[in-house]
Amino acid sequence: MPYRKTPSEIRRLEAAREHLVACATSVVAEVGWAQTSVTAVADSAGIAAGSVYQHFPSKAALAVEVFRRAAGREVEVLGEVLDGEGDPVERLTRGIEVFARRALENRGLAYALLAAPAEAAVGAERLEFRRRYRALFAEVVRQGMAAGLLPAQNGEITAAALTGAIGEVLVDPLGTPSGHTTDELLTDLTAMALRCAGAPAV
Amino acid sequence: MPYRKTPSEIRRLEAAREHLVACATSVVAEVGWAQTSVTAVADSAGIAAGSVYQHFPSKAALAVEVFRRAAGREVEVLGEVLDGEGDPVERLTRGIEVFARRALENRGLAYALLAAPAEAAVGAERLEFRRRYRALFAEVVRQGMAAGLLPAQNGEITAAALTGAIGEVLVDPLGTPSGHTTDELLTDLTAMALRCAGAPAV
DNA sequence: GTCTATATAAAGATAGAC
DNA sequence: GTCTATCTTTATATAGAC
Image 1: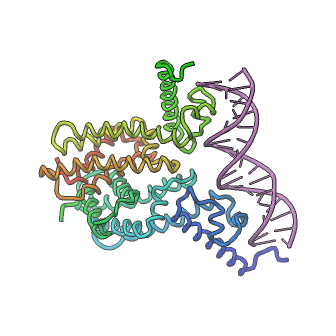
Image 2: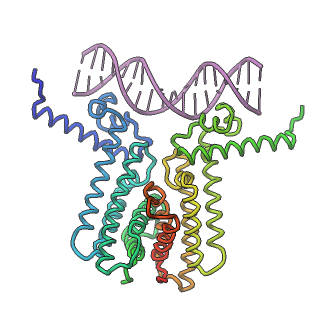
C-alpha cells in the first residue's frame, strides 16, 4: 500500500479533472451559470453528483476554475495579437477583430465570460479579467500615442469602451440579425474602434 | 361592508406599495440583487416578510417593478436631453454627460441597472432597457450624420459602444480612484464618445 | 474511487391567529 | 391587513455501502 500515488494514477486523476472542467465549460456555455447545477455537470461528465467533490471542494471552486481557464485563453490570444507584428494601430485593429470573432464564434461562452449572471466568486474573477482585457487594449493605445499615430487621450477609457462595446454587441441577441453578416459586423466594429481611439480615417 | 374600496383605502394601499418599492430599490442599490432577500426588503420597509405578498405576487414581480421604475427614470432623463436644444453633437455630448453623471452619483443603483448579477426576469428587463438606451443614442447619431456633422457609420454599434463604455467605467471599482475627479472622468468620457461617433476634434 | 441516499441550509411562499 | 410560524422547494454537500 504505497503512501504515494503512482504516475499513472496521477495522470488518470488529472484526466478526470480535465474532463470535468471541459464538461462544465460546455454546460455553462449552453445554459449559463445560473442553470449550471452540480447535478447537470455531473450528468454531462457521466459521473455521479457526489463524485464531483472528489475533484473540487465546492461548486464555487469548480466554477472559478472553468472561468479562469476560458478567460485565460482569451487574454492570451488577445495579448499575442496586440503584442505581435505591425504598428500599434494595425495591431489594435487585428486585436479587436480576433477578440470579437472568437466571441461571436462561441457566443454562449463569451456571454458567460463577459456578462452572464454569476455567483459572487465568478463575478470577482470576471472583474479581474475585464481589467486584464482593458490593460492590454490600454497598452497598445499608449504605444499608438507614443508613436504619434493616435491623439492624446485617456487610454484606460478608450480600452474600457472597446471592451464594453464588444460585450454589448454580444449581449444583444438581435446584434447580428438578418441583413448583417459576421464580416459586416466586424468591419463596423473595427471602424468604430479606430474612431474611438482617434485613428485617422482610412 | 362596502364591496368597493374607499378612496382613502386605495391611497393607503398605493402609498404602502410605493414605500415598499422605494425601500426595495434602496436595498438593491446597497447590496445588489443577489443579496436582496424578501426578508431584507421587508425589514427595510418595517413590515413582516409575509406582508410583502399583499402587494406583489412574488419576489420576481417586485424585482421587476423596482427595475422598471429606476431604469425608466434614466431613459426618460436621457431622452429629454438627447431630444432637447442644440445640434446633434451638442446633444450627444450633454446626453453622455448626464447619463454618466447620474450613474456616478448613484453608483450602486447604476451598477444594479447596468451590470449586477440578477435573476432571469430582471435580466430580461435589463436587455430591453439597454436596447432603449442604445436606440436613443443611435437616433442622435443618425441625426448627426443627416446634418453632416458626423461621418457615415453604423450608429447601432456606436450606440452600443457608448452604453458599454459607461457601464464598464462603472463596473470597475478602481474606475475613479485617486487622481481622477468626477469632472476629469466626464471630460475624458465625453471626449472618447465624440471620437467614437467621429465628431471632429475641437 | 464511485455510487446512492440523505442531511443540511437558505429562501420563497402560505396558513391561520389576531 | 398584518404578523408569526411553518411549509416547500431546490441545490449543495456529506456519509456510508460497494
